[in-house]
Every structure is written in structure tokens, then in C-alpha cells.
Image 1 (cartoon, rainbow, N blue to C red):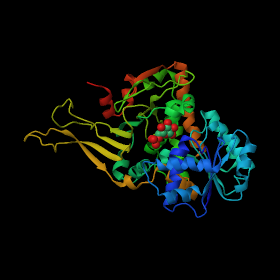
Image 2: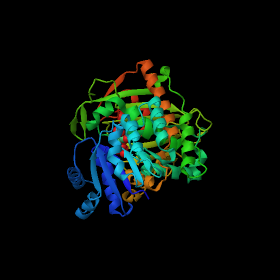
Image 3: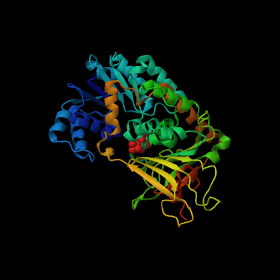
Image 4: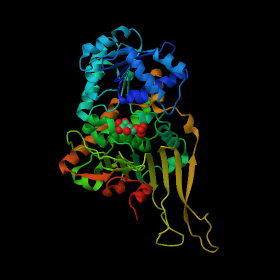
Length: 477
Ligand code: BG6
């Protein structure tokens, strides 16, 4: 098994908050290979002692895991640090050459603008020789053209079957459960098409703001940051055809077909089928928070609602409402599938004013549960009448407690060479192709940025993009 990790961007937020803590826990659980070691690489002129001190402090403040002092020291002994200028391939090559005879996994947690020079340096330093591997954080580029350039350049240096593109949502157990539920249950598969499904909502709301990531976010915004990756991945899992097997490429083939079937967005639909927003000052959990003001006064959005259509046999005519935002009222990742009404209504109130459509809600975050909304008379009608009332069936499990956090799972899969939870080059490009159509439509339409107070459910015009329950909260009566 690959035993050497070259971690670029080691001083960054992602590495400090998630990557190193994940590795520490994997090591504590005995899941890393015998001679495992990490070379941490970043621009800061630290030495190994200083960097170990930074990690020691970081590990002391973990909230989800309390390692022992011995575990921390045993881990730190395996970490060394090199300062590197990732704009210069020769600097990268010098920083890794002494490890090139070991099977390495290089992990790039750095801005995509540095991917190509860093990979050239890794190839030059011998760190791409087979069987070495490469893990790439999202975003791969900022549009289709830059994604293609990155994929093509890196593809000339290392084979696709040794590249692991990360979308950490795929590492979340609750997200994988979408596959289990869809393809493990005849009940769902039978109704999973345009004949029975009226609409799908996918919401990823966050209460956190842009905070320390201003320079990245001001160039990215919610559409590129969240929809291009996590939300389109969720959409693929909901909409894909059953793969022939769970082999990585069979799953990825089906996801690509969904992305390629997305109808390009166009300017004349922009106002009706999308909303862009940016948070103003407000209150979250009783605490005042400031408005988002990007550094260069850029036009970037922190909220997006957009309706996608998948032009294929299964989904023709079914709207997929996608929505995400920062500084919203709550943190929630929810997929809601609303079914069409029954064809003929037998019950009280022929106008169907008491009818609520069947709705299947998969809540993925913060807690994991599934809710099925049915109509029933169980609530006890008077004798002689049969009046229906909505009934919610709730299924929740405790398994969440023992589940590995996404990055632990993804590290293990990459070390073992399992690609199923990683994104292939053509998937990334197909996702960017659709995102580019939204960006172009907004530009052509001059779509305005709508303000929403921090702590709300987004701009007033955005309720159609929210699943029904959130919609009700957003619209005070
Ligand atoms: C990242 C985005 O990919 O995902 C962030 O860049 C976002 O802006 C984060 O906050 C959300 O991840 P999670 O796992 O907290 O839902």
C-alpha cells in the first residue's frame, strides 16, 4: 500500500481543520500502513519543529475526537515540513525528490491556478512514477476551458487511473446511502420517474459565512463553489440510471450521462428559473453577523437558487430545484422528492383542499434521517366519514455515531486505489459545461444580486427553490 503522503497546502484551512485530524484518527485506529509518513508542503518558511508545534496545538482543540498525547506524538514523528514555491516546478521537484523512490500519494489542497506547475514539479521530481497517485481537491478550474486545460495537462503527466478528484460530499456516509436507498428498494425504484415524480428539491444551506476564505470566494461564489460540485453530485445520485455494478467506472458512466443530459440554461429563463443573492448584516443564533463584502467589490453571489432540467426519458419535464447559500438560518442538506397527486380523489373535500402530495425527504445533514409523507385516516375519522390527514413516517438510525468523517473514508479509498467515490475527468467537465451556461445566462440577462439578511432563508423571490417545509419558514404568515 502507498505509505507516503505529500500534502501540498499543509498550512491551509482545509488541511488544518480536516486533513491532518483525519490522518491522525486513521493512524490511531491502526488503518494507515506500517511505514506511513507525511511530508507537509506550503509556502510559509516554517521548519519541521515549528510545523509540528502548529499541528500539536490544532490537535488539542479538536471537538469530534480526543487523541491521547502518545497518539499525537507518534503521529507527529511521521510528519516533516518543507517550504515550497508551487509556482515553480523546480522548487516542487527539489522538495520531493528524496521521497520519489517510495509509492507516494500527492494531495493538492491548493488553488487550482497552481495545479499545473505543481504537477509539473512532481513529475520532474519523480513523484508521479507508477504506482504513485494524485489526489486533487475541488474546484478543478473555474470554468470548462480551465478545467479542460488542467485535466489535459495533468493527464499528460500521470494516468487517469492514478488520479483521485475529490468531492468530499461523496465521502459522506449519508450521501452514499442515497445509492443504497435507491437501488436497494423496489418500492422506490418503481416510482422513480416522470410518471410519478412531480419535482425534486436539493438544498444545502449553511449558517457559516465566507469568513477566512475571502480571496478564493470572491472569485468563485456559490454557483461555482457548491453547485458545480456537491449539488450536481447529489443530483447525479438522485437521477442516474442503475449502474450495471458498483465498479467505479460503471457508477461514473451513469453520472456523466445525467450531467450531459442537463438542459443548458438560457438568458431568457434566468429571471424565472434562478435567483442570485448576497447576505447583508443579520443575526444567527442570537449573534449579530456582518454583511459579506468581497474585497474588490466583485459581483459574487453567496446564495443561488436555480432550476435544472434533465432532458432524458426518465426525467423529461421534472424540475430539479437546486439551492444553496451561506449565512442562512440553519445548516441543512436535504433532498426532497415530491410525488404527483393521485389521479382520482375519493375522499371528503372533492376540491382536494386537504390533500398533501406524498413526499420523500432525505435529510443528510446535520442529522441523518428519512421521512415519508403519506395521506392516512389513522388520525381517527368520525364514523361514516373517511377524511384523510397527512401522516409523517420517520426513519432515523443511530449509525451516524460510528461513521468515519468524509475525508477519512476518502483517504482510505485513495490509498487502496478505489475510485468509486472520486470524480472522473469527463464528469468534472460535463458539470462545468452546465455551470458555464448558467454563468453566461446571468451575464447576458444582467441578473441582479438580491440581498438577504444573514440568518434568513435567502432572498424573498427564492422560495420556489426551497423544499416545502423551508418555504413555509421563509414566508412568515
Ligand atoms: C466546501 C465549500 O467544498 O464545502 C465550502 O468550498 C463549504 O464553501 C463546504 O462550506 C461545505 O461542506 P460541509 O461538509 O460542511 O457541508
